[in-house]
Length: 187
Image (cartoon, rainbow, N blue to C red; front, side):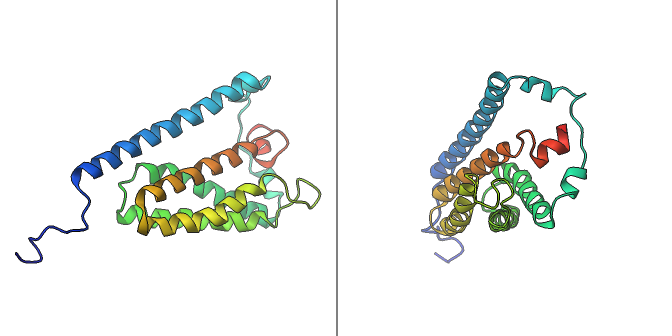
């Protein structure tokens, strides 16, 4: 047998690929259901939260963001990139060139925003706040998840999913009344 016709001993069996695809789909639906449950909980538990969803209260004004420091603006842009690329990564076929390119962009955005947050301490008079825990998670988790991509693909997928969920949780806190994002859309 020539090298071209010999089966690759390192190839993943078709059944394992199918199982990974099913696991990816289940994880995607779990993430969707979890995010949906969080939104429903906010509308149920926060008085008046339903008014936020009304079109007449929703607006878009960059003025509050432009009034912030360049560091805060950079942070918002890198978070937006990571938030938007996350779902793209979940639906792209894994292992493709596009998945890798978008993955590296996502990782760079997460690492950049993680570093930037350590210099943004406006919330607590110059002190670190509990939200900085997510920055530590990103700075430790992203390199680990990238390393896992070459060694253990399923662990890589779980790590990246966890990092994205952490990003969404941190993002939800940024929508609190009085924060910049709140002012951009509802202020």
